[in-house]
Image (cartoon, rainbow, N blue to C red; front, top):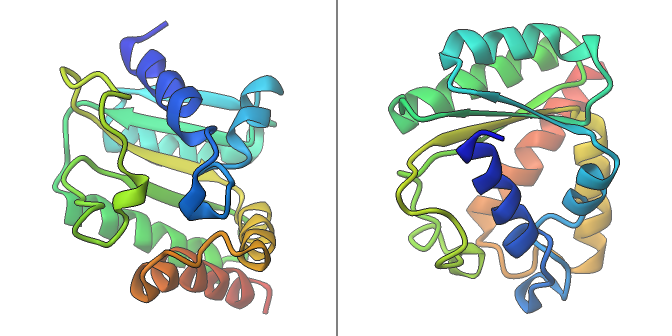
Amino acid sequence: MHKIEADIRKWSHEFLEVPNEKLNGLPPCPYAKQAWLDDKVVFSINTGLDGLAKEVADFNEHDYDIVVWANEVLPEMEYLDGWCDGVNEAMSIAGKDMHLMVFHPDYDAEQAGLDFLVEEDVVDESLTYCMVFVQRLSPLDDAALSLEKSGYYKHFPVDVFHSLVIDRRRLRNEGQN
């Protein structure tokens, strides 16, 4: 197993799947554990942006719930975020049920008001990589709707909630028209 895959699996097990009082007692990713158990996660590691583009193009050719693209060569955070936003907009316009979610080490969760989503000593500090989760938009938004009703997002700053949930919902709704 690649060291980045092992690190991501550890992060998931020790953080994403662990209940958090600031998320109404739910884990940061309430669906991660089941995705691992069902073997619905696949990795694309150190394949560059060309590899990410290939994962996007091939996404509907397999039955995974999520492709985790991870890269040690870091594109600028703004570039990667803009690239993924552009793909998300294009997928919405084309009516494709897909969404890309960026994780970049230069993103400061504490500064964004998400200090409750920062956990020390969970990941290998000697590794530096960014990630993009490629997944279907409709189940992601359905899950967000359910989580929203449970109070999951009540500690999220309004601007972060809008960028993570409301903007994604807009993409889904526009893609259905």
